[in-house]
Length: 158
Image 1 (cartoon, rainbow, N blue to C red):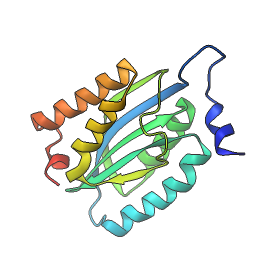
Image 2: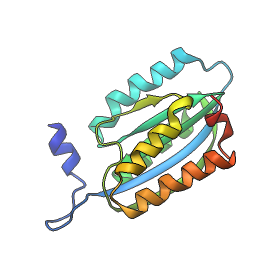
Image 3: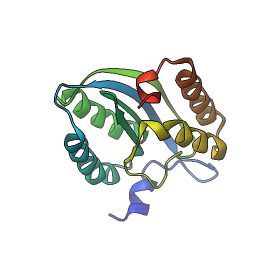
């Protein structure tokens, strides 16, 4: 199946500017012993699995914390979340935001991109600067405010 065809599986009928996308933003704590090599294994797996299931997003790891933004078809993200919950490399998944609506992809070319903690503000701000969908922009503003308020301080201090 071509990438264009996979991404169109969740497209609504004619007349809609954006596809129906489910978005999940979460953070979790890394299990003891998780290092850069383990994160590279996670990325390799995500870069194989995500494109086959129409999922895009970003992963931030540092200070023992994972932060991930996922977007794609609800059922596929649900299946991925089940895999994540069973993954012993992290624990304590906390959902920071979720929605499902007709909207743009914020990371359309990222099957899974690793972003350093030092760059997370810039990545979220860049996504906000280019977001055309009001709900996506609101989620990005909320995450940026949480970073500034220190609620996500392990990510901001990486």
